[in-house]
Structure formats: C-alpha cells, structure tokens
Image 1 (spheres, rainbow, N blue to C red):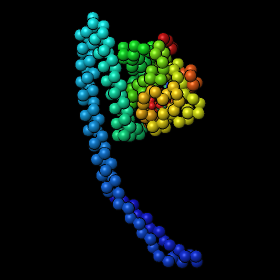
Image 2: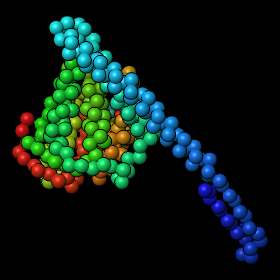
Image 3: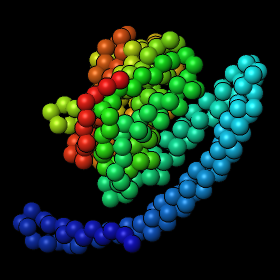
Image 4: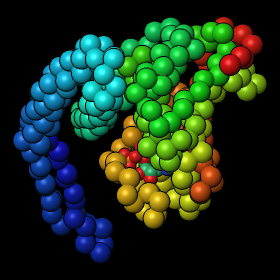
Length: 264
Ligand code: ADP
C-alpha cells in the first residue's frame, strides 16, 4: 500500500544527472479509515438504540394519556424532539459513514404518493405550529432507495418547518413537467438571500443573516439531499425570495411513472 514517485533530475543540457525516489506508505491512513468506519457504525447504533426506546415509549404513553391534555402535549414534545435528534444523528453519522454513490443504492419501485402521504401525516401529528399540505397524482411509481428518499424528504420538510415562523404552511407536491415528475417542498418562511443561494448545498454552509442566526443546525442536511439526488440521477434546485419563502424542487428524471391527474 503506498505511492512511489520517481523523478529524473535533468541539468540544462537535458542529460540525466541523478534519480530522485520518494515513497509514501499509506498503510496507516487506510487502517485509520477502516477503524473510523467501524467506530462510526458502532456509534450510530449506540445512539439509535436509546432514541428508538424514547420514541416508542413516548408514543405508547401518548395513547394512554389522550384524555389528559397537558401530559399528552408534553409527551408529544418528547417524541417530536427525540425524532429531531434521531434525524440529526442520522444526518451527521451517515454523512461521515455512508457513501452516497449510485452503486450503493438499493433501488426498488416506490409509490411516491403513498410515501409522501405517510410522511406528511407524521408531521401533521407532531408539528402543532405548522400545517403541511400535500398535492400528488393518484399514484406515481418511481425507482428509488426508500431510506435515502425518506431522508431527503425529511430534510427538506424539516428545514421548511424550521425556517418558517409559527403558523406557516408547507406545501409538498408532485407535478408532471413535460414528462418529468417534480417533487417540490414550498414554504413561506424566512427565505434565503440571493447571494447565499449558490452555497446552500455546500458542506457545513449556513446562511449568516439576522433571521437565520438564531436557528440551530449543522449545515449538512442540504449537502446530503444533493448527494442523494445525484446518486439517483435526479436534479435538485432551490428558489427563494428573502423574507418571503423558499421552494426546493427535485427533478425525478426517468422514473417508471404511472401518472394520473393531480388532485389535492
Ligand atoms: P442546517 O442544519 O443548518 O439547517 P442545511 O444543510 O439543511 O443545514 O441547510 C443549509 C442552510 O441553508 C441552512 O443553515 C439555512 O441557512 C439555509 N436553509 C435551508 N433550508 C432553508 C429554508 N427552507 N428556508 C430558509 N433557509 C434555509
């Protein structure tokens, strides 16, 4: 394991004067990468196990306390925050660990309309301060890696909620643009300044504005969205007006689609 550089040293008349050999042993670097992968896989499991228990029991208790409004509200918050932490852990650890290359996707036919319905209803149940609407065709089958697609949509809807004031509405939709399905997540939140738009998909980039600064994040969510979209061969695009709102669009090129009329 390593790299060799052999360089001939010439004098001014181009006659070889000597040989320079450099050897770099990368065994340690490769072993370190392997250890790091194993460590992150273990860490990811260690984080998820207690979070799954917190989520599960919070949900169970919520059903047992439906008549006690205050307790129910507190448990909803526990569940909501545990889910948020789960997504942060997923994003951070997966980003370090998972390679989002095309070969590593487990593609399967997915009914995008059904999948979005379940995501949107999970937000409806937990985000008391925002409304999430959905508009899709009757059914729209695409070929995708389900876990990655879920992560992509959760990152976009999660951001839309996070960067919108209370009372805001988030519109999730699937439309047909000249034979290409487009999945959009539209919010009427704080928006993104025009000069920041080219950088939002960069690793660890966070918009530095008065409206954005108080809102916490890692700057990895959109980078992950972009990687997931690109691994599938999809396009991802953001449009925004600062102070008015933002729309993210995923262009689902070459899906195996059964498109029917769009209805709410
Ligand atoms: P973060 O964890 O900081 O939210 P992301 O990678 O998801 O990181 O997003 C990068 C940055 O883009 C965010 O820090 C935020 O400044 C901006 N941003 C992302 N989504 C939105 C949105 N829907 N509305 C306004 N700003 C957004």
